[in-house]
Length: 85
Image (cartoon, rainbow, N blue to C red; front, side, top):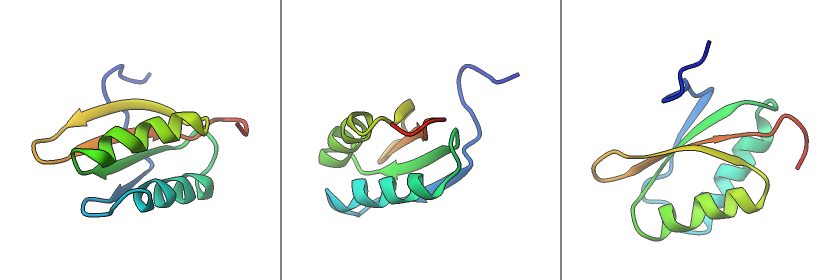
């Protein structure tokens, strides 16, 4: 049974301090290396990164499961689809 609030991510990336679009590119590359259905947690800075990266991932077919404000940075949880987008 999974909790509706938080799932335990399969992998985590700290991309604080990484500029756009490099943070999106690194996130996408990591997701492509993970198994279908895997959950990745990514730490992003406020401002442009948190505004751009989730939208860009959704346009690529990834599912954003959670965006959490952790005082000073944001943690997003993104799931790789079970089937190719």
